[in-house]
Length: 111
Image 1 (cartoon, rainbow, N blue to C red):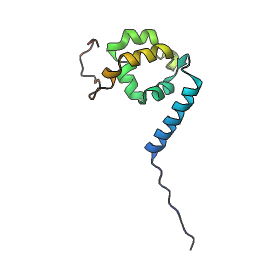
Image 2: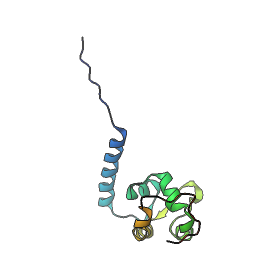
Image 3: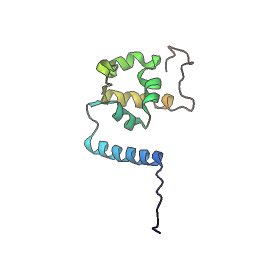
């Protein structure tokens, strides 16, 4: 009888490890000029759906996003790195409050 070994991989743990490593790599190469969605996910530790709902397509930030992003023109999000970093710092507490913005929040409510 041959001994067997069962390896259980926690997908969430692997994702977190990969994110940490990517952050270190990005830190070494600098801020960059433009980010794509993947880079924005790494920079914010947030997933695509959350970023779309709470930042990129949030009516509260529509005007700012029109200046910072390409609004997914051509099917791919492109984001001005420096400007997005400033935006994220400015709205850090709002974006990271316990109850994230939902579609039931008042449209046009300024932060």
